[in-house]
Amino acid sequence: MQIMNSKINVLITGSTGFIGSYFINQYSSQLIINTFSFLRDNLETLNLDGIDCVVHCGALVHQMNVEPNYEQFFDSNVNHTLQMAIKAKENNVKQFIFISTVKVFGEQSKEIFNENSPTNPKDNYGLTKKIAEQKLLELEDKNFKIAILRLPLVFGPGVKANFGSLINIVNTFKILPLGSINNKRSIVFVGNVCQYIFQIMQLKERGIFIANEDESFSTSELINQISKALGKNIILFSIPLFNQLLKILKPNYYQRLFENLEVDNSLTRKILKIEQNKFSCNQSFKQTISTYVK
Image (cartoon, rainbow, N blue to C red; front, side, top):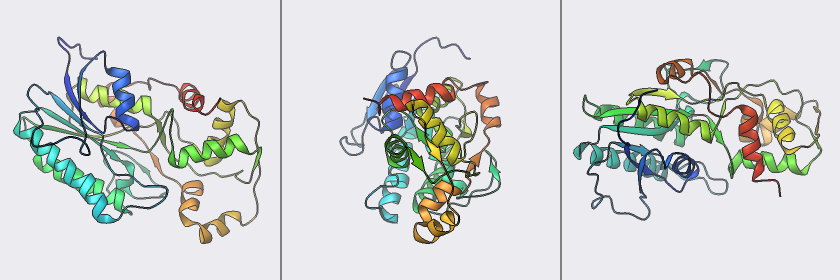
């Protein structure tokens, strides 16, 4: 690991969000951290003097109730990203780290995606993240480094959305019809995401990176990990044709529960000198579950 002579001066967008808030809590003693919100602050008056790196965590993601339309995704994920990057470049910021998603690769696949896999996003979120990536790379030059960190499903303390719903289901029911699911999906703990961001910053790297846990999980394995962290015994069983019925009635649920989305980040780990994640799978699940156990 590179030794710093002085603290890196960082600007974080999305600082109150899931990743941004965890990063600040974990690394505030090692960095000089400033924050910016497109909802509360004015970009025109933003002072970037002395900022070494911008970490752009702010984004519009899938919503549980009402899904944003394409224009809303584009405004947040493309326009805001470019506005911040252009401002950073004009003010001589040396590095811009963009938090992206493995959804730029597409959805389910038997292929294991890596840093060099072709992209083929299937939804508005993945598409607008991909457009933002492309436009950022067009801004890059020798004095302005662009680093893109693609993430699978992120979990951790206080997680909501699909992962939070799954925890609540496992915490409520002792028997679930989700046994013998042999898919593979990549996930990553928020603390390990922050480790990757910190290493990219420390090493002043550029390029495309992926954060991932040390192993991928089937839905059945993931439920067992959650129940173990909860200290519960759960019985999983399979119902004939249940998956086919779900595919017809709730295709989005079917996709998340039964299909594959797996990544390999061996190249990222080599470049960033990460031999193993900061938090083990057991530690990650225990930290996550701790906020659900009263």
